[in-house]
Image 1: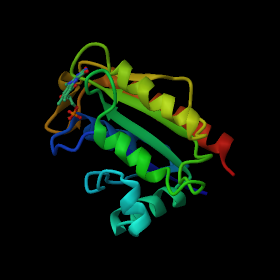
Image 2 (image 1 turned 60 degrees about the vertical axis):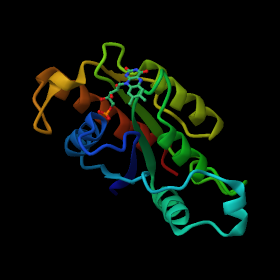
Image 3 (image 1 turned 135 degrees about the vertical axis):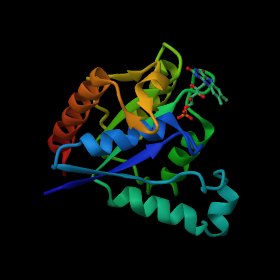
Image 4 (image 1 turned 90 degrees about the vertical axis):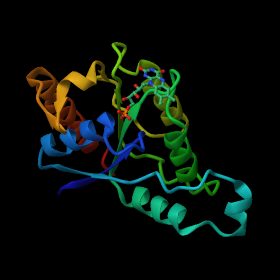
Length: 183
Ligand code: FNR
């Protein structure tokens, strides 16, 4: 059975390196998992008044896609040593209404991406902190802190062999993690 993995990309810009990493991971994934990016850019900022008045379709569609997924892969840039607001908002939207979180139990992993050398460590662990509370088993190893990312892509294509080897190993390990935690 092919397990469906929802991929969240924390950057909204078109030329995002994080999105390029997510696309590379999708093409390197073994046949046991299928990666699909679930867009987060059109989710209104979470507001409980909006929830109570009747949640917008963008929220309910997003929640349905997460509920239907067998696992969730978080790919995030680092903004001010944390995750971007857009990604945190998507996490918040998916966690509500209270008692109906879309996230609970889904096997997860985190990939952080940066043009700098620290590989988005702060963002990676900010996401991991949420995943503990959301009851999402998060793959501890291998960790993925992808620094110096601009040099690894050319025109959207991954051109760095060691990065490709690492991402291949990472996504294979995640496929094993998903299998281990499959319902
Ligand atoms: C950044 N950037 C950044 N980089 C980093 O390594 N640590 C950081 O704390 C920050 N902070 C930060 C804040 C804001 C508001 C922006 C817009 C950018 C730079 C960031 O790594 C760079 O823009 C990446 O290219 C963003 O990822 P995408 O959009 O290419 O996926």
